[in-house]
Image 1 (spheres, rainbow, N blue to C red):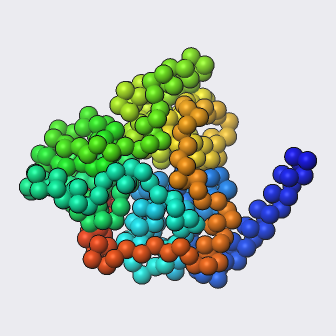
Image 2: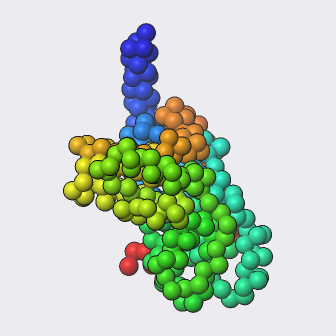
Image 3: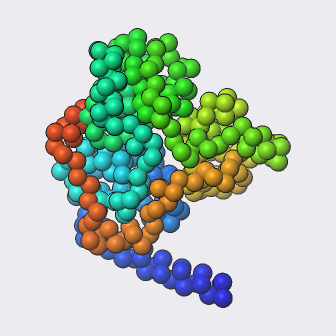
Length: 314
């Protein structure tokens, strides 16, 4: 029975993929997928990447339609950078708890307490918050962006764990918002210790969204893209991975002869996993749900995103 069910699923997936190719051609669409998406989404994407790479692709594509397979703030960033494109997402319920931990009113109040202090905001934030921001960053370029700001003090939001990591690599004073990623923050020292005892020959690689005490245990710290690159180029053959488990698709693709153990069974973002192949096809058929960002908000937010692309591209 199980074999028959798998065979039927494979047949349905093949039909969906064929329909997807047809729709992409009809709509002149491009599919962007974050590394945390389900394998079936990453497999059919035109580009897989972290937030920075996908922002670059959204800004430069000549497609008429951008299908963003990620969470809602990522679709907003794509729409802000490509205002004349139609941006759709497979499921509008794909939110980000960390992005919801800061809002524009709260950030304005903090700015009022620190007049003239520039704001650096992690890209994992809403368009409204980006509109109150001087420059956006991603985990891949956070240190470079903070160090580029012409001020000895910056307001940082919303991820306190990434902020703590950046603080170790800059002389600037950072006023850090108390947000965090629910998924990465779940990883504990005990989890890592248990995995290291089980796999003593494995290197531990970790995302800086994890807790500071977990990051301090790592053999390598970096963004999702940096982790993938490090594992691909390393002489080591076995890794304990401290980031969302969707990264396993690209890790296995790049390094099929290496072994990857995720540091906890809880390193799964439920919001990223809301999207699936069926929803992807359906959103292109219906051209919905679409991402809309009010013009006034988009214009202000675009400046903070474009500043990041300019600085990080140097």
